[in-house]
Image (cartoon, rainbow, N blue to C red; front, side):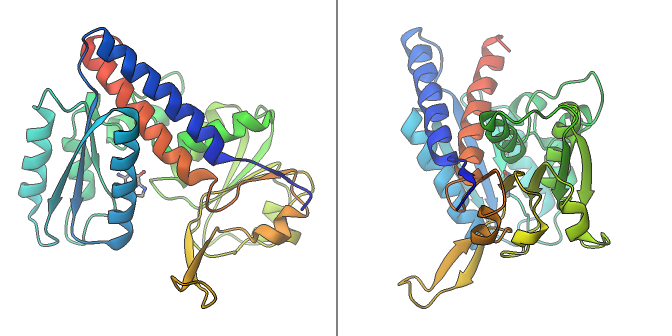
Length: 294
Ligand code: GUN
């Protein structure tokens, strides 16, 4: 392994400690405890795991978190009524509707219902629209893309003028991370399933953000020597040698890429912990906005 390991777990831990201190300070000043409401619709097992982790992280830093669950056959109006109720609840500063929603629900309409000031996921169309426009700032930046940018900052890589390749164009990661890289003056290429000569394009990348959801898809000989590799993928692959029967791998072949890259994130322990730490930061910010201190 030649590449430096980007230790997302340790970086996230120090961000969480900062949030905890800020929450303690709020309490000592008599300000309200920051409150996060989560909404899960249906029983997607991965969503349940992620939301459970978010609640646990809130508890550790002193943020109040309240979970809401609706059945998979919930109607559009039921989901949006719950969001409106949370918009009006003064104890709740941030609202997170876990995605994906079950088929048949209009995701855009649900996200549009979340109050802008409580949109800690940054997925409200106005927040995303502001992210895409020069000279405008969203109130909240989506957690995973923001976590990716924090990891890049920690490597010390110069983003200005760098060739950044983003593999994947999802609303949750690929597209917003591309917008953040453009804002940081990188030259950004967005690749997806119809891209021709993917290895050739990735070989030009000083920075690669892989968010395609295919286990160990990116091979070592696609990586430019010395490149910074941020692997957002979390994929289960069968592994009978483990009691639980599977292991987690990223979208990048870690062993191969680690021989070529300058720095690389592990999976797990890279981007994942940053997503949660950033959500905590966003919830704290939402509480400050409610105090009148943006
Ligand atoms: N599904 C996968 N990642 C996320 C996230 O960051 N926020 C929400 N709400 N749903 C997700």
